[in-house]
Structure formats: C-alpha cells, structure tokens
View 1 (cartoon, rainbow, N blue to C red):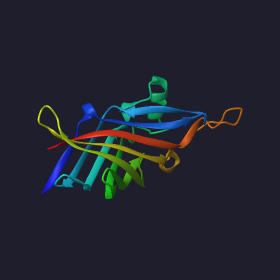
View 2: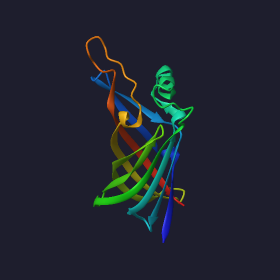
View 3: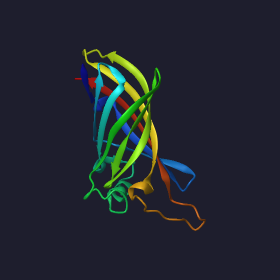
View 4: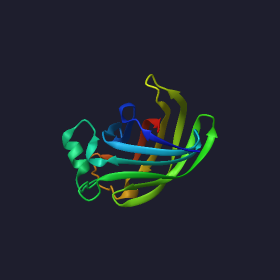
Length: 175
C-alpha cells in the first residue's frame, strides 16, 4: 500500500551555510518550501521525495545580502524563482540512516546530489497525526549551478566559498 506524506512546515526548517572570507560561515534559510514523499507502507527506504523552495523567501538575517542573493549575480529569482529536488533512489545504510540520491535544480541547472538522512522514526502527535522525522544534510558547489559571483579581498581571501552545506529538519505528516 502506497503512503503519501506531506511536510509539516510549522515543525520543519530548510537551511544552508557558506564560508565567508574563508574564516567563518554565514547561515541562511528558506521561509517558504514544500516537500512530499511516497512510501510503500511506512518504509522510508522505499521513499520517493520531492521538494521545492521559493528562493524569494531566502533569509540570511541581512536584507541587503538577501536582495543580492535574489539578484542576477546569484539566484536571479525573476527568471528562476524556485529550487527543486527530486529523488531518484534511496539506500538504507542502517536502521536510522538513509542516503537519498536525486537531482537538484537551481537557476535552470540540474545536477545529481546524494543527501544523508538521519531518520528519527514515526510518532503520533497529540492531535492524532502520524508523523515521520528526519534530519537531512549534504553539500553542493554553487559554481555547478551558475552561482559564480565572487570577490577577492586585498589580502587574497575569497569572499564567498564555493561549497554550500545543506541542512533540513523535516517532519512529514501521513496523509
């Protein structure tokens, strides 16, 4: 029996980190996103995942930086308003770890990626909803998606690193 799961956005978050000046990380998140999964019964090793984020909802805590990220220098949200991910396969590593292979699309570029999911299990909340929880992590290179804006300081430090670390806390509600 196929089971459909939908993200509980009130109890989920999607974020990222990138090196700044090569000495620290800057964090950000997406305030508007959606995710779905279908599984055979409640078995997430059989899952098919889909995810999308509204890039206009990007938030790094600095309005000017968020505006720059939305501009043609980075995401060009006027032409490419969404980031999407579609899984192509799941490998169960052990009872609480999955590898989710898939395709991520940013700024019109699609690339393969493998994400790690720490599966926390299934529980029923006080309102009778069955939920599954997982922590997802991975990394991509922003240059693979045409996000190539950068600058170099007088001392030779790159202002924005190429590797983007992805992190999501997801609660999915059984439909």
